[in-house]
Length: 259
Image (tube, rainbow, N blue to C red):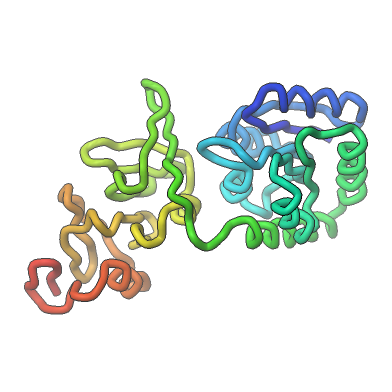
């Protein structure tokens, strides 16, 4: 089996690699230090198995799964430092996981299970299990953790209340903060789940806006305070109006919206 090891801690990656030495049917083809690298490696190398750390900055293990898609994931063994109570989510979904620090006996047990499930029917089972896991570990309410974005000068920390709006550009999200733009390799659906729901609303499949940055709402678009005109899809119009609050589009020619 061709394996990828994903962990932001070099010592943790080395530990998994040392455990794999005792399993000659497994070969490490790549090591990744973050979620972005993991997504790229899975897409380009098509591994058979991925040892995936859950807690990583910028893009955690669950976001890696969302980026790649349940149906395109190889066999997964999650690696986690969660306590015994949080691990209940993994057990409830019957997903393979390893608790840090990882011991050889527990690692061998996980590998035996992976080998036993390398069939087409098992792949369908894993798909159902992953979907069940996400329901357990991804609460409906988003966190307010800042977004970390790579720039030519280093890493920029962007708090949610700084963001005016986010647009889609191929495989990237374009984050608009005042006159600045930042590129983040993450889907809008993933970002929408991470952003505070009381502050942001999806106005179109290619745009999310900060309600506090909307200057004007029209029937087919919103006008942002930086002057940007962002289309709103017909099916999202009601949710956009609800998110912005009462009074928008209530009266033709009103200062906060026009019919």
